[in-house]
Length: 113
Length: 115
Image (tube, rainbow over all chains, first blue to last red; front, top):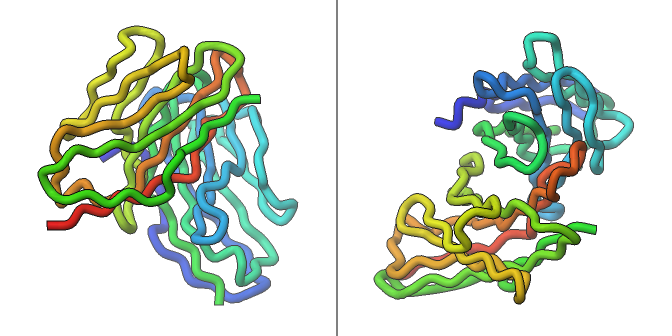
């Protein structure tokens, strides 16, 4: 158990809908990362937060947004969903967000039908 | 720019034989380097990390990796493969002291272990 909690574990929704994925980091970690993993794209970095502020942005679509709250949990919002958004979404956390390892949650498997 | 290249997309070994998964990195400074493992339908688990201390790093489950600056390599090895080692392995670089730059993942190497 990495100490990073992601909910829900599975999500099935229709095209055009909006969903929210939630992540609770390890106790004491200030930085949260979001990654998307699909068969064709592999592991893609989406966005990173540190202590509530956006730190780095990767290949995140405009239809996607995220935030980190004062209690350090994070949410990833995916809207106007398309079939191609079906993937595993991972959250990871680290102590400082730089030069250190990250610990990954078990992921949320999103299926868009 | 920082990058990491895993030289083999797929490696097949027999149980009890050595494992070698190759990784080269590109970094202007001494980076932190990691290996993660992902079993099917599971999250990523940290196997080991290099953070500028000893160049030979020991990890979990008998894996180790050697940091070779002259070759810009960080290959993962295990003396004797076990069936449970079959998984996807990712080499990862964390750029040195660069806030706001996320972990950079290689494309992964699938390890198959046959009996």
